[in-house]
Image (cartoon, rainbow, N blue to C red; front, side):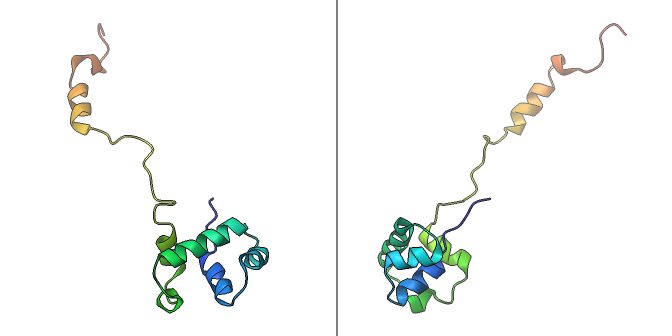
Length: 98
């Protein structure tokens, strides 16, 4: 299972005027992660009052919009091609000579 960044906790600690180093030590995350969230927050042009009521999933979506999105593993199946192939005589499951 993947581990999501603690965006809300990081922003709350940074809002209390803690340094990135102190916030990372308290939360047990990398200083780089704290700095990245701080930069993304400043780039978002949102205030803490705007996003403080958001749930964690929406908040995470603001900071990491493409992360952990569903990516299909296989190409979509062309069912019209599959049905056409199954209609061919080679797929006849009745044994020959019985």
